[in-house]
Length: 133
Image (tube, rainbow, N blue to C red; front, side, top):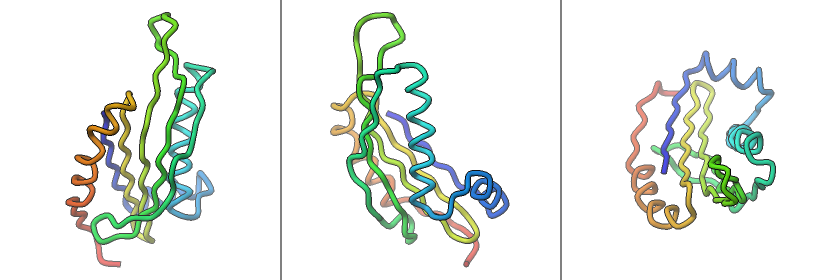
């Protein structure tokens, strides 16, 4: 399992949004998902992306958009005829001053079920201190 948390300030947010032509927090999550999926697709041409759920949640008293995904049929690099799936959630919260991104994914579907509750505890207890807006 992997947790990734990014917090970007106004300067880097403006550059990121302008460069990628992104206008809202859900678009940030989709951009990151597409980038993540392309990385696997370059290594495993049979990989498929499935959007499982989209919605909004509160993270540190901020509104955030999220998307849960699965990437299926990823070939192993060992040359064996085996595949695996990845399940993940991409969360983003965007304000005029900053961007918060949280990414969590597991390499095996069974691990997702066992660890997602722990991830939710982490997100629910996360406190982001930022400039008042």
